[in-house]
Length: 242
Ligand SMILES: O=C(O)[C@H](CS(=O)(=O)O)OP(=O)(O)O
Ligand SMILES: [Mg+2]
Image (cartoon, rainbow, N blue to C red; front, side, top):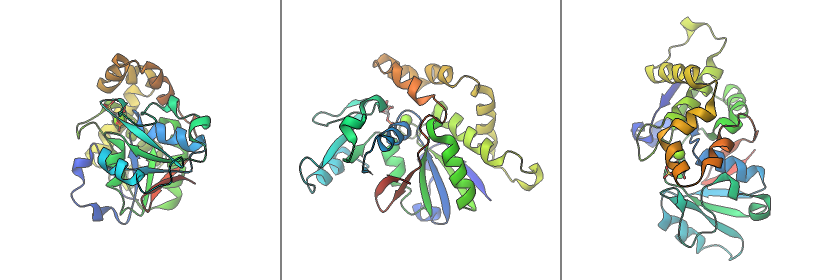
């Protein structure tokens, strides 16, 4: 099993290079957590779009009432949309049976870049064991792809990616693993911050930004390890829970 890790989607030189890999897209704050929450609460499918314009265009092709327009810019709900990007908004009452068209700043963009992957799955702290189990059972080469923020490094994504890498490599003989420096670094970050993930989120740049916007409760949801054991898989343009 070859394991690699990108700290931002900018490292994807050619999307076709992902074709034989299982890609785990990590966006802890908040896309991966929100997507897992929505699927757990009965959303039918989630359609990630790389822009607000694409989201609105896609919506125009659907039966009114059958979908919700979801997403944020600058962390706040997009004008005219039904839901923003707080996982706490994605209640069963709101999302059950619905098609969610989803335009977040970083996560939905990163996900759409993995369309050629053998498998593209969405990982976060809330479903980490579910994701690792699938990755162990279903692939040779694995790429953990951090969404980051505006193609910049995000501590929370790197720590979660390190947790996934640690769980994937635990117990394997060191000499058999040819770990890239990014995997080694991310595992170290996880070992340093893993004991108090909520504190790490609160101290992170993104966590502080969300707290300033009044979303401090989202950090608690996003820090809850294995609280939402669903497996979101992105295939043929839609994300479904399997
Ligand atoms: O909604 C979020 O938390 C972020 C946008 S921002 O960094 O807060 O502006 O989007 P995501 O795509 O979930 O990283
Ligand atoms: Mg994010």
